[in-house]
Length: 49
Image (tube, rainbow, N blue to C red):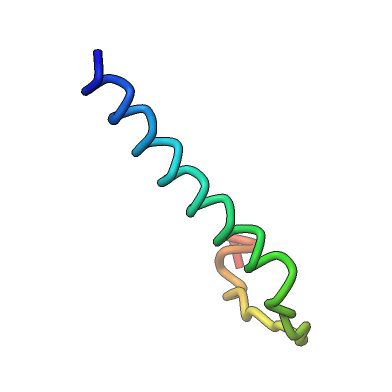
């Protein structure tokens, strides 16, 4: 039984670290929006061309 409690505690600590990392990314990283262009060849739009 003590090994089960130790395992659950370890899993809980790891889950808390992952959650804290995601929270930090959400609040401290600000993405920079930019314009994006993708060229599509004419034969992919109209194969008979």
